[in-house]
Amino acid sequence: MSVAGRALTGAIRGYQLGISPLTGPRCKYHPTCSHFAIEAIQVHGAFVGTGLAAWRVLRCNPWSNGGVDDVPEKGERLFRLTRNNAAMLNQSTSARLT
Amino acid sequence: MDTLLYPLEWVVANIVVIWHQIWAFIGLDPTSGITWALAIVGLVVTIRAALIPLFVKQIKASRAMQLIAPDLKKVQDKYKGKKDQASREAMSRETMELYSKHKTNPFASCLPMLIQAPIFFALFRVLNYNLGGDAGPIGLLSQDLIDQAANATFFGAHLNETFFNSEGMSAKIVSAVLIVAMVTTTFLTQHQLTRKNLPASALEGPMAQQQKILMYALPFIFVITGPNFPVGVLIYWTTTNIWTFGQQFYVIRNNPTPGSEAERQHQERLAAKAARKAARRGEDPSAVVIEQAPAIEDESKRSGQRQQPKRKNRGGSKPQALPADDTKDES
Image (cartoon, rainbow over the protein chains, first blue to last red):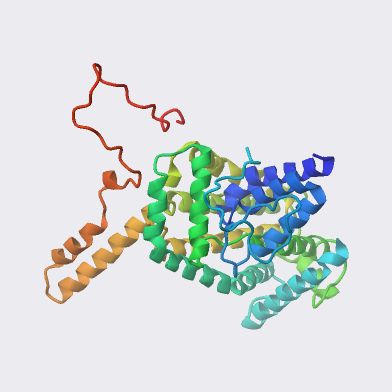
């Protein structure tokens, strides 16, 4: 991962450990916005990953219904209005995440 | 940064000035620090009142939760006792999918919190640089008002003084009191949420333990950051915390999470109310209570896992060892 990617991931980990427990669970999606951001940066790099994460946070608004929304694979269409992989319930977890 | 936040700062400054004028109109002394402190409280009221529609939406969503509670229970039973990460994640996936299928979601969503951060930052800048520093007038906040606010004292403390950057003891005492109030309200809000409004399944396991430690430790972050904040910001923050606590108290009391301690108390209150009503009508109050009883399921039966069929007289010479229990090595 690039330096920028590492810095961003570190900042998000800091949020997950330090700030998120204070506010309680609030994300409507799975994976949560912060996990999504880390994974997006891992897969697509710091620049595109940040864009994907920002788009996800915008979709995590009071008018959305939430649900399962995974980071799109490389080469897949990146920015959709609907969720990604919505139907793939049984292909359990994202294998990329440890 | 200056130009980016300027519109927000303009709005924040105007709201504070308008509230200051409202309090002055009601009869408070406009030069008094209390009036300025109440103007900041007014800012909190304005912002949080603007967010009430979102709050109502969230309550409606949690009402809809009652409807999908049986489905939710099925998912929970399926993963009951499984604490490894893959099962936890699969459970969370299925739960989230269930919410979206029924177009309801009990969570507040991430965006509003991120939007509130710039508002807070803008307030910090207005209080620090416009009211307290030499950034000059902004919006309705004229130089006269800035001078007036700079000279106003709230229990002897100027609104722009911080614990570290202040003269005399009064500002230190006021900010210390406010910091303690911030720590207390943050802790109480968190405590209320975890102790009362989470289902029992969420309160076990190593993650819950970690959360508990954080709950006790994290409010003290304000002890480190608080002394650098001006009294005005501390007033804003404490008021916001109190509002959050009250709002959460209301939600937990009236729309508790299914399976939580708060829900049990809610049911008890409803039952007691029904019994009182029945007694007033002259009926036997115990009849109502019995009606409620089947709702409490036998906990031992609540396993969605298929039981292994067993042959009555299993062959084999020795009694076989039980399969390894994967729930034990976690704890």
